[in-house]
Image (cartoon, rainbow, N blue to C red; front, top):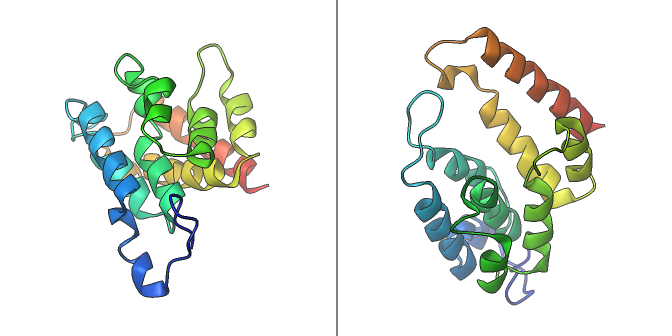
Length: 161
């Protein structure tokens, strides 16, 4: 595994601490600040979602991307791309974040197909979809939820092709 700041490789024992690099701590702080007042569809603090997605990652760059994957889409007023770029997360992370930010007017499957072109964005989106597809997170499942879960299944299939 590679450190995005120094391009050095981590040992297996360091991988367990991956989330605590300087850049991932910065991403954790941004993630928390952006989502601290948000709640998910079941009323739980939304920030648990990107934290969970980040815990599925196995390297620094994908952990950063997982933590920040909804920040610009949900909070571009405070954290537009220019602000995140200025924080030094690196080109590799920023490219994946651009792909993971669903642009207004873009069809969902076109968005998914773009993500598929970038291994980091693809890995983060698959973890995001897995967490979003966990119906145990919902207190009740509405027909709207069922449609969203079907859409997520279609997206997972596309990303795995």
